[in-house]
Image (cartoon, rainbow, N blue to C red; front, side, top):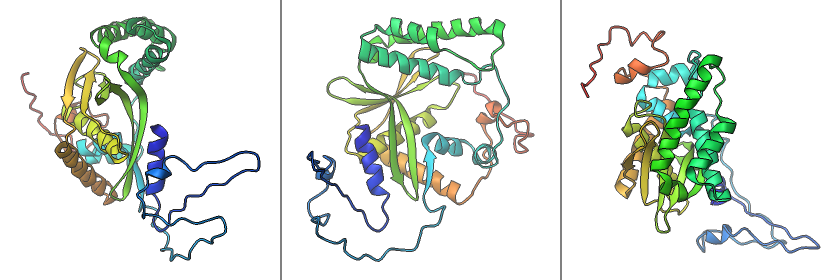
Length: 309
C-alpha cells in the first residue's frame, strides 16, 4: 500500500508528458507494474519497443516556487499563527532548550516500536511498551537526576494507555504510514501514527501527548488531511480519531466526504497564504504556550482570557 501511494504521487507530478516504460532481460521475464493496470483504458497510448515516443510540446520550465512541499504539521502551524510560522519556518528561529525537548517524539517512537512488537512478534501490549521504554526512552537535554523521575512518569502514562487501549493496539495494521498527495500548487506530506483495521473498517489515529499540546480542531484537520490523501489513492477510510496519551482518552474525528471537503478547502487556503507570503500575526490563546513569546512584538499587551474549565 505504501508503494501504491508512492506510485500515485510520482504519476501525478508530471506536468506535460508521463511515460511508463519496462524492459525484458535475456534470462528473466519482466512484467509491468500491477499499478499500471489500474489506469483507465483509453487514458494512455500503448507503444511497442519499436515505436518512437511521439513529439510533444513541452512547456517552459516551472517556477522554482511553483510546486512546493509542505507537511501536514507545517499547514497546521501556519493555521495557528502565520507570524509564528514565519519566525520558525522562514526565518529559522529555534525554541530554547528544555529538558522535555523531544519528549513527545520519544513517546511516539516507543509506541511505534511497541506496535511492531505486538503485530510482528506477538507481544502483549504491556510487555511491548515496557520493552520499548527500557531500551529506547531518551531525552537528550535532561538533567541526570531528573531522568529517572521523568522516565517513570512516562512509563506510568504509556502503560496506563496501552492497558485501556489494548484491543485497539491489537488491531494496528500499519504504523508510521507515509502519505503524500498533490493539493493546489503543492505536495502535502505526512506520516500517520497508526492505521487500525478491525476486519471491516480502516481507521486513522493520531497520537497526542496531551490535550494541551494542540487544539482538537487542529488535530482533526490533520487526521482529515491524511484521510484525504489516502482517499486519492483509492483507500477508503471509515473512521478517524485522536488519542491523548496523558489520560488515555479518545476523541473521534469526522472523515465523511463533507468533512474532507472542508479540510481540503482549509488546507488550500493555508497553502495559498504561505505561497503568497501572508504572515499576518494571529494572537490568541496559543500565545501563552508559544515558543517565540519573548521575541514576538504582537504578543505584548495581549490580555488572554482563559475559560474556567
